Length: 339
Ligand code: PBG
Image 1 (cartoon, protein in one colour):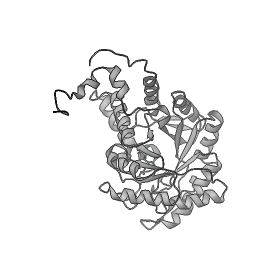
Image 2 (cartoon, rainbow, N blue to C red):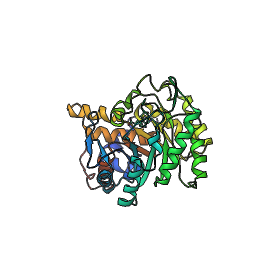
Image 3 (cartoon, rainbow, N blue to C red):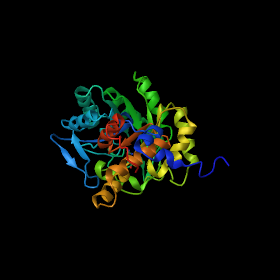
Image 4 (cartoon, rainbow, N blue to C red):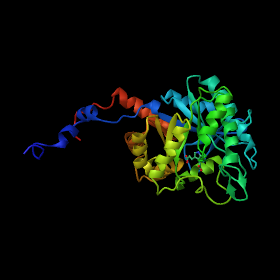
């Protein structure tokens, strides 16, 4: 009977790398990888982040060093996060035209003109309470926050951001930012919406790096419940209706099912964020010799890509890009042995 063993042998196409390489469905490309960069005040800074070995926080005068290494590896875009000198209740440093992110944009544009500059638009790095919006008592207020996020996005666009990426999860922020950008003459700046962002334990190391751990409570009243998949589609619809040009799912690996659904449900580019805790987990296990770092990184990024992400934000961008570029040249993949 056709369709049965021994006529059917899926292993035939797996026998050699020669064959595997021509039937491979998913390939990483360096240009699909986006490198997150943390920018701190001061000069000459390259501060290590304890919970993210290999990741540093750069001052404006040095941030191009790291970006240039990634660019040279084939990475074509970075996303910037700012840690300001001073924080206050409403996060005013976020929209100061001489703020760290704004200065870093100018520096990177001058040093690496072909690099695409994305900025994270949120207040949690800039507020003294660490929440992503303004407070009334212990409530994170939605509507008054929109105006502040819009100011921040416009300030980033003015400083040269190619794409702005709101990550706050307030309702209506994509529309508010779109209107403000258009009014300020930035109608050509796209919005990458963190449309589906879960309230996740995987952001822990990022909050060390960005000094943005909430001083009380958690983010569950604005970020999504990890138990919900259909709600992701509702967030998606809303952000698309408000003018999102690209959408993101985050964290990536725990939400591949949601990523695949988002990919099916819309016709804009889809991104996924392999977040700080995903990075730290791989680093920690590899440090102990329990897993092979490069192999696991490539496997996770390939799975995220296969599930539907055209763009992947990852702290591994530079090293993964080097391997992806090399792999696509096929220099190493001619191994005739059965393995
Ligand atoms: C800001 C923001 C966060 C991340 C990206 N933008 C932290 C958070 O929501 O607490 C997390 C990224 C990471 O963990 O790598 N709101």
